[in-house]
Image 1 (spheres, one colour):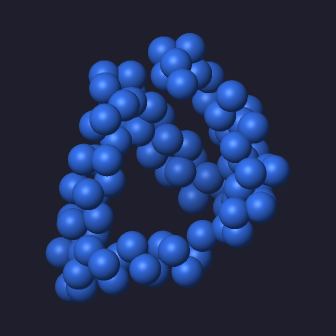
Image 2 (cartoon, rainbow, N blue to C red; image 1 turned 135 degrees about the vertical axis):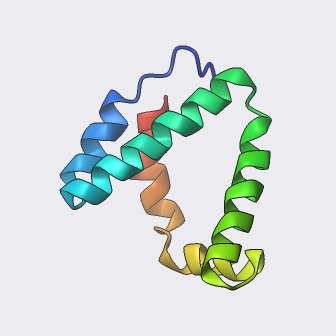
Length: 90
């Protein structure tokens, strides 16, 4: 994946179409930040995920595993990811 050539426009449009306005804009901002990190070095994304997970665990008074399990339960099914969202990253 060439993150320097990646355009967020289609993904942002999809996010806006399927979410509350405030939440959609926050998610788009988060994607912009993640893409910025990926452009520096894609390997940093794993470190960023771990860091954010730990910060959320501290904020919520839980553990990183609990944070990830909660996100897993709320995540979309694999088939929907492949059909609806994955093409937006190409």
